[in-house]
Each structure stands twice: as C-alpha cells, then as structure tokens.
Image 1 (cartoon, rainbow, N blue to C red):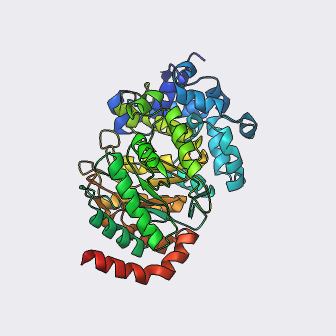
Image 2: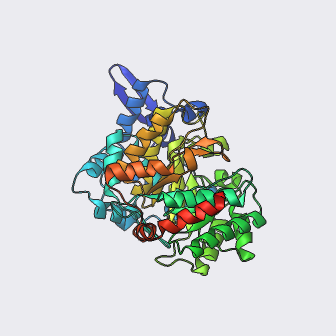
Image 3: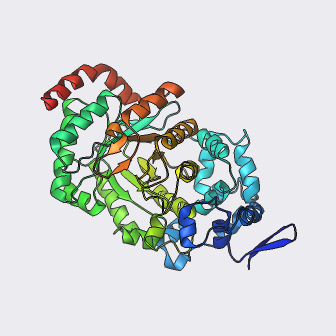
Length: 449
C-alpha cells in the first residue's frame, strides 16, 4: 500500500507508510519527539489512530517495518510466525482486534493459544488504541508461567527479583542485603546481582556466594549475575554455578550489535545453560531485560517509534523460552520517557505486549533522579501492574540502588502489593520462608556483627 489517510473535518492527514502511521498513532513520549517522528498535535495523533484502527491485521505480515533481508530480528519474527494460530483473528482490523481482546470470550486460554500467531508489530499497534484500563484488563487475563527452581507467574502470585547490588561488589554487604530480602519474602523470581566489574572472576565469585547461601539454607530460588553474556559464559566454562544467563536485548539487529550480541550468541548461551540442567521444577534458563528507547539511544531504531521497537525485543525473547523478562521501564531517562505519566503508560504497554506474545513479564518499576517522576508515580505503576497480573517486580533495599544510581521498588513494596491484592510468593518459596525465617535472622545477626 502506498500510504494511509484520514479526513478530520476539512483536513486530510496523510501517512506515507506503516512505519510512520505507527509512530504518529503512539501516545506522546519524549523519545519519539527526540527522534522527530511523534505526532505534531493531538489531532494528528487521533487521525493516525483512526487510520490504524481500520488497518487489517494481516497487512503487518506483508509489510515488514525493517526489511527481512537486512535485519535478523525481522527474520526470526517472520520465520517463527504460526499462521494457523493467527487464523483466529486473521480477518480482523486493528480496531476490531482491540474489541475482540476486551470481549469476555477472549479468555486466558484463548489468548495463550493465539500468542504464537501474533507478531510484535501487531500487538504494538493494538496497544496504541487502548486506554490504560484496557491494557490492564487484557493483560490480567493472561497467565504465563515459567519454572526453574520456583514456579513464577501462577494466578494469585507475585514474585520478586532480589537485587542486592553494591558499588564495590562487597561480598559481606551483598550477603547482608540477600538475607534482609529473604526475611521479607523477596527473591523467589531470582537473586540477581548487577556487578560493578564485568569480569569472569567477579562473576564467578558472586555466583559462588549466592549459591553457597542457597545451598546452606536449601532456598528454592535461582541465581544470576547480570554481567555481559560473554562474561557469564566464560565464568560458566570455568565452573561457576550458573543458573540463569542474563542479557539486555533490543528490537533490531543493529541495536543488539551495539550491546555486543546477536542471535547466534544468545542461542549458544541458551544451549550451554540448558545443558547444565540445574533446575528442579523446570529448565527455563534465560533472563532478558529490555527498555523503551534502547534502540533509539544506539541510533539503531530505523525510524520506528520506541514502543514498537520494544515489542520487537519481545519477539526476539520469545524464541528462547525465557524464565524471566522484564522491562526496566524508567531507567534510560527522561530523554525517552519524560515524566511519571509517560513511564506509567510505557510500563502498562510493555507488560501488555509481552504477555500477549506469551512472555513471563516482570517490570523494574523505576526512574532516574533527573526525571519528572517521584515515589507517588511509582506507587501508581506498582498498583496498576499488580492489577494487570505482573509476574514479578524488583526488590531493592530501600528502593534505592546505590550501585546503578536509580530508584526502583523495595522489599516492602512487594509486601504492600501482596497485602492489598491478596497475592503470595511462588509456592515453593512460600513454604520455605515459613519454615526457615528464624535461621535467616540468626545469619543476618552474624553478618552485621
């Protein structure tokens, strides 16, 4: 198709291609303004949304936003598409698809079966037509369960990543933060440390520390040190006790290249960790983090809006059947999501798109200190994501990550959500906490002494 048009009153709005139509239909965010692709006015945005609503879903399968020949993420998305699963909605437009998703007949089982038939660009498109309550309602229907030593994502459950970072990788301080988090019911998704130093020796040391605590107290959880995946692989080859392998990913080949990764490397890592067979209730071994704006920050967005690029990252993640995926929603900064309102919208979009594509979605509910956001904004995001059925959030001591220098969610934030919504930790971890909390108090006292 040569272009798209909408008539509003006496004015005709023209959108030359699908890429620009999606960009102009996107709710306002600073990253798209920075890229020069945002709608110039609210009226132009509405016009684009009207044209998008009338677009057949099948058109996305005939017009790749990034050419198939030049982008391996595009090739993976299209080569793995399940047309039989897509047949349930193949006759719909984007607007009709929104209505179909909101209908009570589109239950969790139906959406789970549909997931392999959807490509990221389709779910990004429909999210642009949705209010916040629509994003919550649809995502809440979907339960995506993942398993390693704990079962994460079951209905009525909320898990946490225990994030005990330290700016000097101090083992004693990290151990104290781990025990503190465990006492408050945090860590059932993963105990995951961002190392200050990206070296195999440090990764090996930190993994050994976490694994020693896990084995000493027979904790049903999994560990991860969030260094570059090549560093983790080297530590694995040297005999480090690796559970999950981590990598930040993006939605284009060029953006992933800027991270120093490609699909072949991710596939190698997936195979290496899978062969260890360290899980007890499952063997899902990959952990991915994403965030709107990452492709634009690398000048690798191909003039796509940042939310569509983000959804494409989920298409990449899906191939590896990950244990955990989360959007670090406000981490990149106000250049991409300016204020609390934009961060809230992005968090719910990301969660919705990931769940609809069949991913076990979590969220790092966060902001940088120079963003127009505060803890009240984070409380709103926490609450709406819990209502939407998010699999897990972060547990950071005091919600203040002193190594990465940003504000996230705390151990107590998870307790708030569990109390208000009647949510519980992963079942294996819940039983363990009830039985072993007195021993953790003793260990914390020893560390502090």
